[in-house]
Image (tube, rainbow over all chains, first blue to last red; front, side):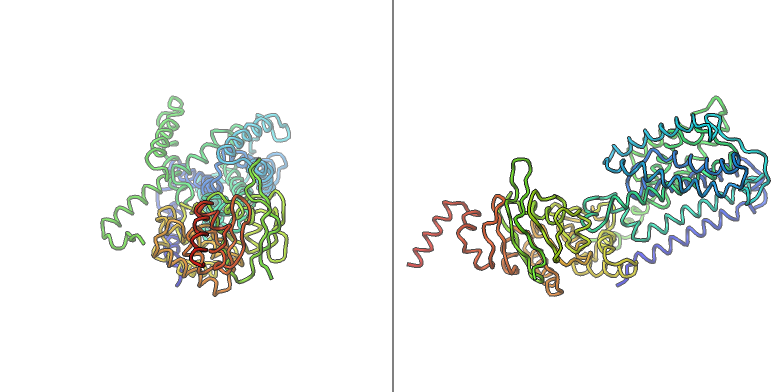
Length: 340
Length: 251
């Protein structure tokens, strides 16, 4: 017998491909790209969904909650910015170095941290953000607290800079496809199952031959490298970077909260979370301006509290609940299986 | 050749000696029952063999190699896979995915792993539940899941820790059938069990532990008449009475 879940996975993939196709043609709709603010919101949704998805590999699938991902995000951003601003080249070598450095830093700091279990790992990652933030602020080579400002440069793929939002829109879409593609691939392969097994029970996983320490380190490395790639987009989009923009607890929390809001450990969760939070964040900021600074965080905080109490599985969990209820109402025969 | 060999294995927790110089062998292709009253150190011994505990002293060799002090995953990779007495389903994963994790130990590509998992699920009669979350299974199902998952890992030695405890007699019969089928397929088994009517007929050899010491190691039909075993299980007074009864009947 062939596993019946295979067909369902293929069905899911078709929906994802359709979604990507729709997002790809949206800017071609007359008038859509004219509203620069709307484009900005879409770009940020794609960016934050990718960031949350990168975090989701370690935090959602592997169950190791990290509050330190802004460090890898910052390293990626600085990699590209250093190449462009300090050395005056294309950002590409800096991107590669930044991603590799983020992976390396991730492995080095998490090797001792993974010896801590449960909440202690999360607490240790908090401290790491603080350490890197201070270090980046006083490090003259990378611009210190002032940061790095992009000069006016030619737009295009060489510099990864565009004068219009449409260019960034497609850049963000490619980032989204890469990160979501990697996670989709992991989800269906041995390593993906091993990550979930480590999350659900480390001792059980080990009794089945899973080297849990190696699984966690690898998950951390993949997660950090993809997070660094998101950092690259962030700096190329903002055309400047300083330590507080990237390596802050604020930013670190966003990785965690978007994923949890959407549904940790699911492919759809990070997108669902970003699609709810980012418009909320950007529109409240636009409506209330300086006065309302933080209104989005107040609302977001409330949503998170409600979510954790009512539906810890996030937005994806809500949809699953609804679907199960519909299936149950339709016919009890198929939906429920008797006891043995 | 002995697949598993224990040589003077001792495990201490502080001053408490849970296993005291336990030695025995498990021959390839056989079923060895490990019995003893509660607290005799059966699960502790399992934990030592599977690497969850590092023995205080002694040597454990598996398949001709010393495995004393290796980590659980290293021992599992060598082919000694266990189940847990207190069931440990990977709760938020489906039954199928639970078994799949086991299957991935030996099968490196998806296709063979999926087939192996489906086969083990069928063998342990979990097919109707395979898409349910493992956390939602009833206890009998969770016990069978423990077995299916360990089995999927393609073990040479399967260590079953009380997989029949708490099952109804029909369920015990089904489990025994599965075990016999596994034996036919060439898997060596070591079984910790309290359900005597289940273990006695299928074991080739029974090892009895009492307060950490091995008090007997013999064929099951001789074990049931062993005075030391009867005393350990039923107490000295009762054993004395039984002895008198037996000698009375004989003379």
